[in-house]
Image (cartoon, rainbow, N blue to C red; front, side, top):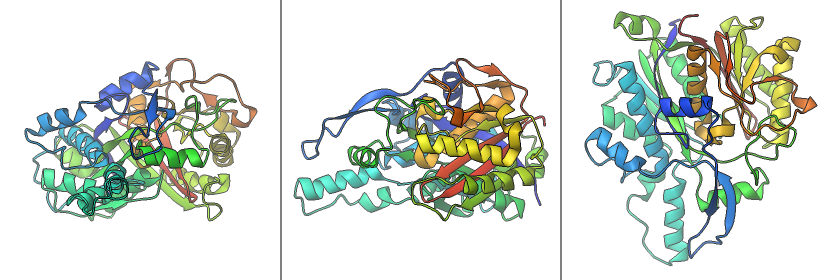
Amino acid sequence: MNRIAVTGLGAISALGASLEDNWQAAVAGQSGIARCIMGDSEYGPGGLELPMARVADGYEAALDAKFGRPVAAGLDPFARFILAPALEALEQSGLRGHEVLNERTAVIFGHGLGGLATLEAGYERFFGMKSARMHPSTVPRVMLSAGVSAVAMAFEIRGPVFATSSACASSAHAIAQGAAMIAIGQVDCALVGGSEAVSTAGSVRAWEAIKAMSPVTCRPFSADRDGMVLGEGGAVMVLEAWDHATARGATILGELVGWGMSSDAFHITQPSPEGQARAMRQAATQAGALNRDDILISAHGTGTPLNDAAETQSLVDVFGEAARKLPVIATKSAHGHLIGGSAALQAAIGLRALAEGLAPPIQNFTARDPACDLDLVVGEARKIGSKLLLQNAFAFGGLNVALMFAGAED
């Protein structure tokens, strides 16, 4: 089985338009969360004000400038949010224009909901304005595979190209799938990750209806946590067969050493610690890390009462009481919940944390909760000696993924 190197990373979120921007903001304790008024269309209900983490205006022009041609206008925001970090990750890896970006490269991205902005605009046109005609590009902009197709066409990648969709675990499933294809030798390289653009008026109303969103801010593991905050953006990592990467002299940023996947088969929205623990145990076992004490936990950490308590229990189930001594970060407190794109963004920031020996703080934390008795990194960034990163991703429907990465020098 081939070892799997990470040779490129890219990101865009409310924290910034590159991974470096995201890392610097997260480690400095800066937040991309701000109060937004949603639903101001004359055809919509309007008037809803909630904290959100939205990408700053101007990224479309910046994307066009990077490609030297117009690319943004023809894509839904969720696809733009994957094309930008794909370019960044490929350039860092040194693979842009490389011959491997043909039949020996896969593109696999995860998205929970796809082109909501386009879909809502079409419905507004049809139901609100009573227009008999939909925009002719509605279908290709809405489809979940629009992002992978845009990247494949932009970089002339002719290998396996497809999208995964498993709600908040989507990009983690995409990373695991790309890793598996490299491990068995089906491809030499895979662009993996995910994105989301769900901060639309209708989407926000839907999330509000299930009482999942905080009216204040995202406070993972804090005793007064009261819900998540929606974010938008995306992240991409370049995975590569280890021998292929070293043969071309690539800089290796880390190694994916284990992954686990499970289903709770329990409840459509309520988490199961048992199911989460199965995924984590698989990843830790594959990585030989069940008894390691140098693991940085990048928690799913949504800031909802049930999720954070369940994740705490599942960590203790897997690592025993030693789990309470492992440093825990939860960067959704800074960039919000990107739904399908969260795991990829959190993993990219987590890999930087390993490389820098510095864990970004959990923001907005106010009070300890006995149900979340973990070594939470709060207040300010903390120096760490961690050599491994565990990235958790848990989704509605009881779908769980755990990814274990080693730092570049482990």
